[in-house]
Image (cartoon, rainbow, N blue to C red; front, side):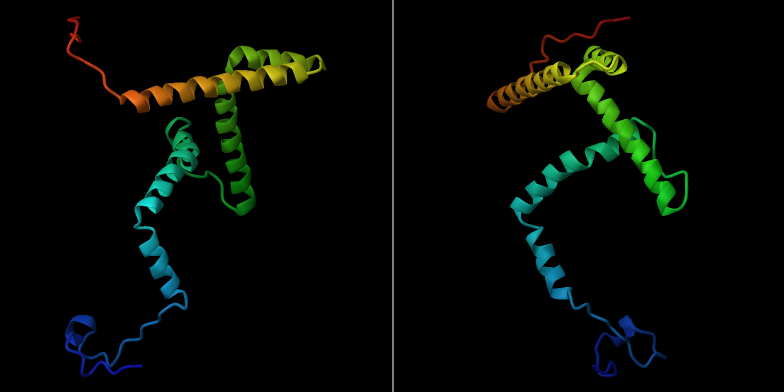
Length: 159
């Protein structure tokens, strides 16, 4: 412990009547400092950018689209239940967006009538695979050509 009496910035740090100031430095201080420095690299920033695009999307969607901003219940058990319901809603909407209402109706009908759903599962997998393939081609076209659009022909229509 060092004495504060000889410190040149003592008056800015502690009040005059206070004799000393205690500082506690975590045993993990050096690790935290190294991690903070590592997170300033371009590679780390790119990883964080990807993470935010992938991992944060469900939370933004539930907040914006579903209108959920806070838990309505208290206690870990009840909050876990409410969170499960919210995530189910998100996943259900996501599934409907991926497979479409027609395939969903077909699946529900087969389940209701106790029919074999293996063919429908294969159809759903094919539908998703084709959608992903189309999306990846679209992304490649954008990356190759850049996102350019000529708005010179655009004219606002009077109403």
